[in-house]
Length: 361
Ligand code: SAH
Image 1: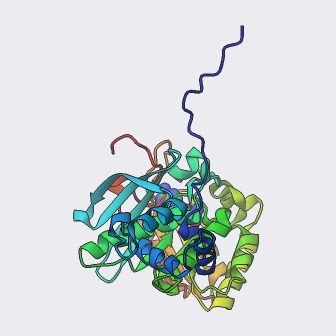
Image 2 (image 1 turned 60 degrees about the horizontal axis):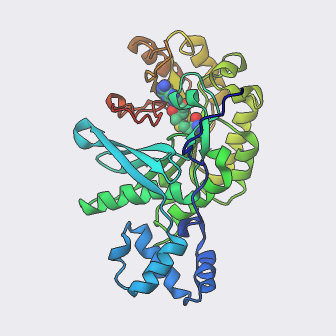
Image 3 (image 1 turned 60 degrees about the vertical axis):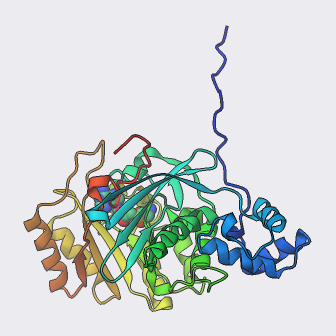
């Protein structure tokens, strides 16, 4: 006899119910009106939600109305499972659980001149880059617009409570943002929309990082946005990049660079190139020279990231003298280059380390 599959309480993975933050201001007014409630209530509700208020703090909404609007437009999104800190509290990683049990992480980083939150756009990632912990586990699901924005709202509310605020958002957490295109773009708009409709953030303080999905980069160029684009290049030649960033077999270096340069020409924004330096893999002087050749004269900034260790990979960061030589060659060719100050290694919260494991760190 064939054994029956044991599926007790298997979580049904899926997006949460429609939320206020999935809608633009006009759609919110329509949704509120459809409940027979005056449209101006949508604005009140939005002001509270983006400020991170809980239902009981929404005191300008009469009790029964508040309950109706909450039930219709504020379904539960993410629950904070755990915060872990390092750098004396300046870096904090949060593990979130979605309504369906899905786990994702975000990371808050306080600097002297800014406070940045690094958000996830997907639970897991389907891009399979072999040096990235998120890529190893595969994709669970896309996050909804509201789930993406809530990571920022929650971080910002916590900062406001201690006299600060989140000034910068980087789409550099779990997932490939351009593989969840519509929801990510809507999330960007919620971050930019002025209070009370959104968080009122500035375009120049938002960075979207991609492995290089060329059709999506082209589409982004047409959005009329001016956020910063970061491209995870990691190798200047197709032979190596095919192995480090597997989508390169679909859209090779020359195509992805020309799409990214077109974005910078249209937006006037400097392109960020991310390059994780991996010992004896992509850190040779000839690769520095080839990278310089491909970027020379363009509006770019190279961010070198000392490789962060991930479980299951033997690769490690380049030795400091090798890193210095790589930097020297790029700069000598006139290419703007810095080495990223990596935060959060001790809490597995640095670039490429997010895996949303529930086991204690
Ligand atoms: N999927 C998008 C967004 C993630 S951003 C992208 O790849 O751009 C995370 C950045 O950290 C990417 O540039 C990624 O390539 C880089 N990264 C991944 N694993 C890393 C590791 N082990 N050490 C250093 N950087 C890593």
